[in-house]
Image (tube, rainbow, N blue to C red):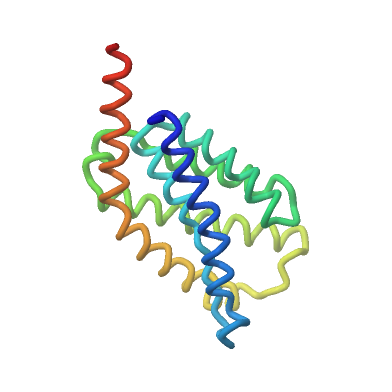
Length: 175
C-alpha cells in the first residue's frame, strides 16, 4: 500500500485541482483574475527532491499525459514541459532535503518556469491570444500567490510523508 500512496495522493490532488479551478473560475464572480492550481506539479517537484530524479520525472510524465488529455488542446505540451522541468528541478541532495525553505523556493521556481514555458509554447503556435502583461497580471501572479500559499501550508506535512515513505520502504526491504 505504501508503494502506491504517493500515486493515490497525486491522483486525488489532480481531481481536486479540476474542482478548485471550476470553483474559482473568474467568470462566475466577475473577476478578471485566473487562479490555476498547480498542486500536483508542486508535489511532483517535492517527490523529485525527496525521492530522486527518476521518481519525480516518472510522475511528471504520467500526470503530464493526464493534463494533456484533459486540459490541453495541444497533446504533449504538458508531458514534455512537466517531465523536463521535474528532471531539471529534482535536486535530491541532503541540503535541499533538510532545508524546507529551499525546497519551497525550488518548487516555486519550477512552477514559474512551467507557467512561462506553457504560455510561450502556446504563443509560438498561435493558441495564446493574450499579451504578456495580461498573462502576468491576470493569470500568473494570482496563480503563483495561490500556489505559494498552498505549498507553504503543505511543505512540512509533505516532507514528513516522504520521510515516512522512505522509512517504510527501508523496513520492507529488510524483510
